[in-house]
View (tube, rainbow over the protein chains, first blue to last red):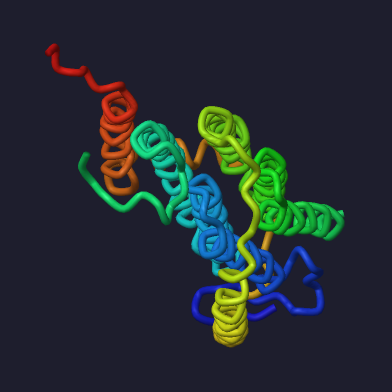
Length: 118
Length: 171
């Protein structure tokens, strides 16, 4: 065990699957791509919203994983908490907008909502 | 043990996310999203973020998905199918982004490994007290904390205003 750049190094052989950064990064990348695919391929607004939630979760997972493996203390977790709060606020506003769109356009197809006023 | 937890939650997350994207029925998609978000909460726990995992379950699994279910049941009339033409167009984009992400991540991982940021040094400790202190500490996260509380108030009012039916002018 040596100390470089203020970070204590452990031998990589001791790290299992849950002890390596890249396994978390792979899960997070899969989440991000799934969210992106949902946003790009679906025409229902709610699928787009769910895709956004997936992408936010992927970013959060990265924050926490880098915070733990990079030795940044609690900063990663605190950032992730704020992201979760903002995502909840975003979901509430988005639900209101979706209901509005459904009322005004009669559908929630993103390709059919093409005007901002009556 | 930690490896077993990681594999379980990672499989739950990835499987839930893929089911959410590709399932035909949107209600099934919402419940698959619940599974994926729960898996992410479990991954937080394997990372030692116990408070964040609980927050994830309370806010996402308990709150956001209930909102989504409300929206689904209030608006969706038919099951929407994945449009194949758009899929054929978008598949290369998603694949290309995947390759790019993979390269970026391997690069970042090697840089971090070179900088000596390897496996965490100690067993994780409970984080709730430290997070509460950091949220209320003036030089740490007090300002974002207060800003978020104001934002939540604005969101509360704004959601009501946006979703309210307009008053038709009396004619």
